Amino acid sequence: MNIVILDAETLGNADLKKFEKFGKLTVYSITPKELTKERTKEADIIITNKVVIDKEIMDNAPNLRLICVAATGMNNVDLDYASRKMIAVKNVAGYSTESVVQHTFALAFYLIESLGYYDEYVKTGKWAKSQIFTHLGRPFFEIAGKTWGIIGLGTIGKRVADIAKSFGCNILYYSASGVDRSSEYERVELEELLKRSDIVSIHAPLNEKTKNLLHYENISLMKDNSILLNLGRGGIINERDLAKAIDEKKIYAGIDVTEQEPINPDNPLNFVKNKEQLFITPHIAWTSIEARERLIEGIAKNIEEFLSRGIK
Image (cartoon, helix red, strand yellow):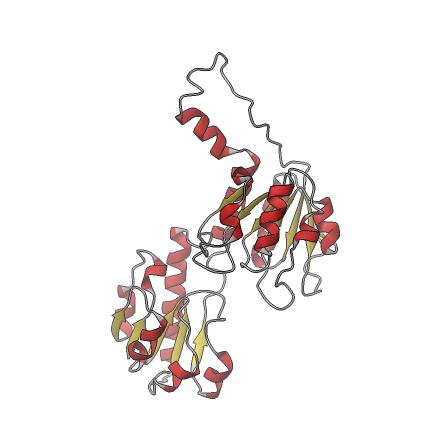
């Protein structure tokens, strides 16, 4: 088996040698679009995180039998054409749940407690010059008793809900698909969720129902000092509208995903005036050490199960 990993850099320092037991392993740190065809032409198995595997790539790889997506989402693979070519496509579900949930609360607490401000206050020597033992420059609220609204109550959203409830939050959720996800939590329409919630977190996929789901008109319904978190996909929030809302109202936003990744230099979020109201991380919510270890184990298991069926 010729196994080709196309974008190993997206996996960090994960141990990739375990794939060598399945055959000849070729590892590329990154693969530009123009090199994908050449690098996969002799592959039996392709491992890709974000590199696109389309009809042209599959037609150019006559031995290709398995595509392993190093993620849960498989939108970078032409699934219909792979099925017609009898090429198996496997993803890894659930590996990053705890990591994404943890990062959700990290974003929330950073914003709620103005941690960047307080860190700067100490490190620039301002606290050392103070005449009192504490500093009350940026008051923060407790999340106990507050309302946490969740957009997308799937596996991750449900886990966030459960943890937020343990902090004493009241939980609301909105289902973009229209499917009831829980009898435990109150399901409401989007506008009601935005009006009532002190914290809103997004854990939904990007599709025709969620594209630009949040825009200037409904973001403006949010309370002053409320928090908006996007741990789903870029494009669910209209970024130009979010930038406008942040500069016009006391709304805070923590986002880990943007419509274009890496972020476009011209993205309006790069130019907000009220920078302390915005916290952006570069799509790292899924990347805990443990999550990436589970991901590699999941890929290896997919290959092992595929080969055990005797497909050569």
